[in-house]
Image (cartoon, rainbow, N blue to C red):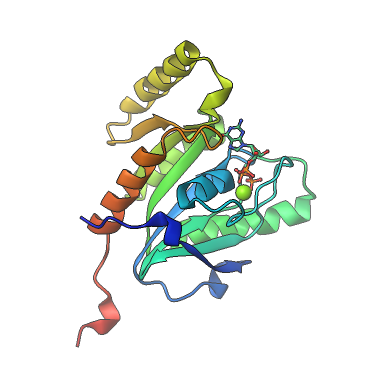
Length: 209
Ligand SMILES: Nc1nc2c(ncn2[C@@H]2O[C@H](COP(=O)(O)OP(=O)(O)OP(=O)(O)O)[C@@H](O)[C@H]2O)c(=O)[nH]1
Ligand SMILES: [Mg+2]
């Protein structure tokens, strides 16, 4: 099993749509979730780099498909959030379209880390995303973010409830609390990414003679 050093992760590029992405080979794991869920913060915490991915108090910060590379053919992707109403309709349409295209067309996308604020989990769009990912045969890890915002008892109750709700899907989805500020769940995230990068690589069809 690969043991990647996530601190070595470097930025590759930001793409407005999938036509601007690098060749579709290797394994990509994308961070998805509602606007403001803490996707970009989780990437920074994982990589030990304060401003690798751009974060903001204002939802809708990440508007492009941002690619990072941890090792050769092992990429992490920071996606724009979904479900944020307060952006101009035109902008929202454009970025939700490229998000949808990325999720549906990108061959090297093998897994999704789905992040939900632990205080507001399993909103309709989250459930849709999880169901869609399961149907599309993507591996899924659910992180309940900002776990520092709840007391220990309430935090554990939320984790248990989300686990119970998702167990009905029979889809082997791990659910873990996560906090970027308190560094909770980082080791679980690293372990899952190592597993996925090791197991989910697909042979490069173009290299077969
Ligand atoms: N208390 C607390 N705040 C957090 C945590 N993670 C993120 N935040 C805050 O939540 C806000 C949103 O974080 P981002 O990482 O930018 O969220 P995002 O999901 O990338 O948002 P978009 O790019 O807009 O979709 C910021 O103000 C962060 O500081 C956490 O673990 N604990
Ligand atoms: Mg972001």
